[in-house]
Length: 120
Image (cartoon, rainbow, N blue to C red; front, top):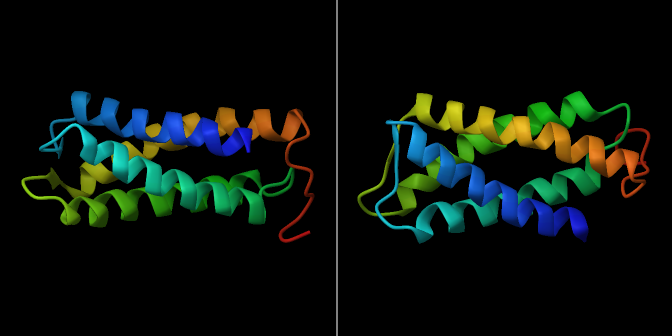
C-alpha cells in the first residue's frame, strides 16, 4: 500500500513538473495533470503488483514507459484546451520512468515486492 501512496504523489507531481518545463505539454487547468497522474499511478501500481521482481525490473520499466507515454498522449484528449504532442508525452514518460527506477529499487530492497519472476 505504501507503493501506491508513493505513486499517487510522485506520478502527478512528475506530470505537473513536465508541464512546467516542457513547451509541448500544456494543461488548461491545475487538476488535469493530477487526475491523469492518479490514473497512471493506479495502472502502474497494478503492473508492479503483477510483474515487479528482481529479475523483471527492466521489463516493468519498459512497460511503465509505454503506458505512461501512450496514457499521457491519449489521456490529454479527454481535457478541453489541453495540448500534448507525441514528443511531449515521450519526454514526460522519461521523467516518470526516472522516478520509477528509484521507486522499484526501494520496493524490492525493502521487501515490499518479493517476486522473482513474472506472476510468481
